[in-house]
Image 1 (tube, rainbow, N blue to C red):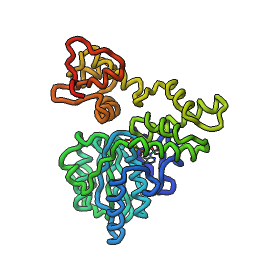
Image 2 (image 1 turned 180 degrees about the horizontal axis):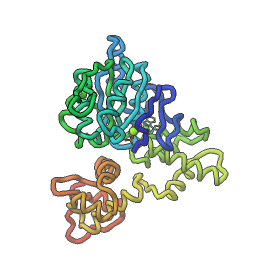
Image 3 (image 1 turned 180 degrees about the vertical axis):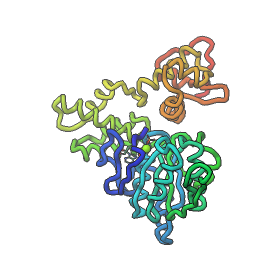
Image 4 (image 1 turned 90 degrees about the vertical axis):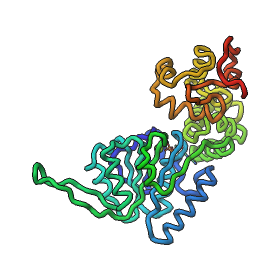
Length: 344
Ligand SMILES: Nc1ncnc2c1ncn2[C@@H]1O[C@H](COP(=O)(O)OP(=O)(O)OP(=O)(O)O)[C@@H](O)[C@H]1O
Ligand SMILES: [Mg+2]
């Protein structure tokens, strides 16, 4: 997940700062943002309407699995609105005072971006309510029995919240966002376009077929596409290749442990565990996390969404179930007493 510091104040021109994700790879405008066509069309309207009224954009919640472009979109929105982006994250706002510091630093119509907004402390979340709704924040002044609170009027602003886990967001917080939008997994062609874009920024020629192969095996995720094309470039360079062709890409991906469906080692471990040790399931997520030695949150927010989307896994009230597609893909014969899904 993202690594923004709690205090960074960035203008769109120097926005960025995620460890390992060169700013030059981040698209700066809606037009440069690949895919998510329906979302872009809507946001473009909302931005133009807000600008036309000289008002801030309504508070916006972006949700979706890691690496799909939520932070990137927040930067772009600020850029398109022609305002500054102030960047922080739920865990970095340790108490109300920190939140007040961010809010009072905002210029008129600026964007405050709170990443991982599902991780706000309850007391902080509560002060955010009045900031979002009434444009005010109460600040404690004085000490002991002279302590009281003073209400501060805030400049009109936009809150953009990002979360990988909407289910963990409290109802009252979610209700205060007027725009709530999902960012979806990308299609193969879109990822291929991102791979081509990144390769051209990196200055390495890549064939269309190679870009599509890398895109296809990127778990629907731009961040993974960018990571894979960098590694494929390393393999190609060491082999002395001038450009990346399909054969280079396939060989490098195999070497990297990314299979034909784009699954990585942890994806396969999880599916193998359910198929072999639990006869297809159902198995509770806590039992899975313990057996795999991975945090439950990683399984739920990073690993499972893609496996669900691709039909390798089902989520049921009784637990996770593997599908026959998963067993087939892993090349495992269905165990006797198979309890997984039959109909895929
Ligand atoms: N639509 C897109 N077009 C081109 N590149 C993209 C797009 N979306 C994301 N990227 C690239 O993928 C990387 C990851 O995106 P980003 O950091 O915005 O994801 P995120 O949704 O905020 O992830 P996290 O939940 O982990 O914070 C970015 O550095 C950017 O270069
Ligand atoms: Mg992010």
